[in-house]
Image 1: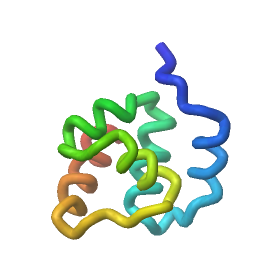
Image 2: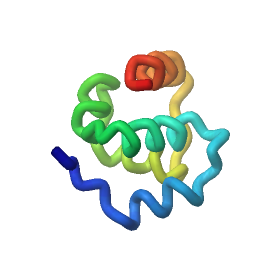
Image 3: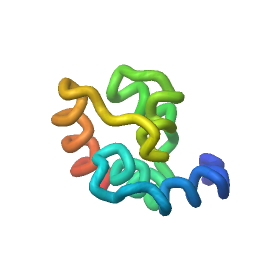
Image 4: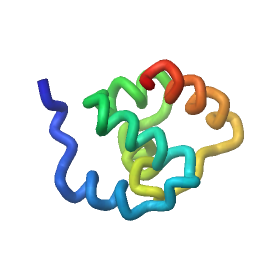
Length: 76
């Protein structure tokens, strides 16, 4: 089943700085076909926030860093 990551989102994620934790999360989710809604629900943030992280447009809040690192590990 495909969760419909757009060509645009994938391209923006590929261009974004891979040092950013949100971009790395995006790459794992795109590769593993994990829906944004699942990520948002697990982290208690909006889907738009997750999309912004995936594209490198916003940085994670300090309180989210550990949770995102744990999520990346669980998805990888």
